Length: 248
Image 1: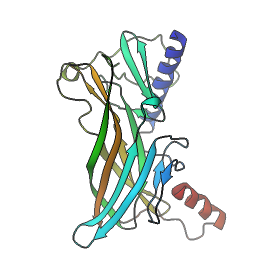
Image 2: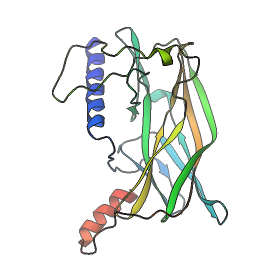
Image 3: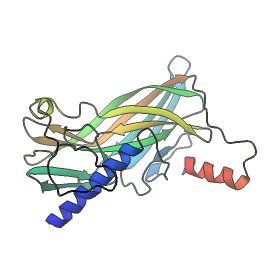
Image 4: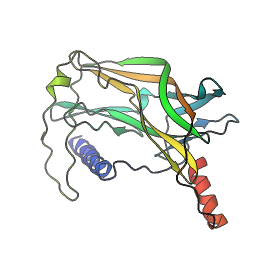
């Protein structure tokens, strides 16, 4: 058991280090478990084997309100894992990364890329509905540690202590379910990055809650100018590769 937990922590530290090195970048992957309508938008994810169920349910546009994209994303308790480590509870979830604030509870986070219609400039994300499930038990969540320099290792110890402003707070952490990231583009396809927080922690009560289902709307207006078009002289094979990266 200890060996398995130690390996989990080592992988987590490696992930933290890699994410730290590549902050501000993203990688494209294939769509998994996406139910599409005949709409021109799609969902991109940075993991090719994501089991989280994401459904595109509606897309609309009016002259007064601009663009709207509606999605529902589901999370399963079966993908949740909780281990004991250094007296804390170490929480992980399949196909999720982690929140990045050092000293604050290390909780799973899911980052996705949503492909947007041509010209849509994202302005807001609005939650329509949620379905929650309390996780039985009392938990003291492991605090996020600083990333290690590449190639450096040490025995598992708690270097960064818990942030008291969070761990003694009556308010849920994190404070939001969904946050907007950077709007970017690849080969002429505009995309917006979203961070979804499926777990919320009440520090004083030491309680965890899983958000099983979130329905939300991405809102936008006309005006985004794509800055990464394919070169005119690109080969047909190269064009197909880029299109596959965006549309899969």
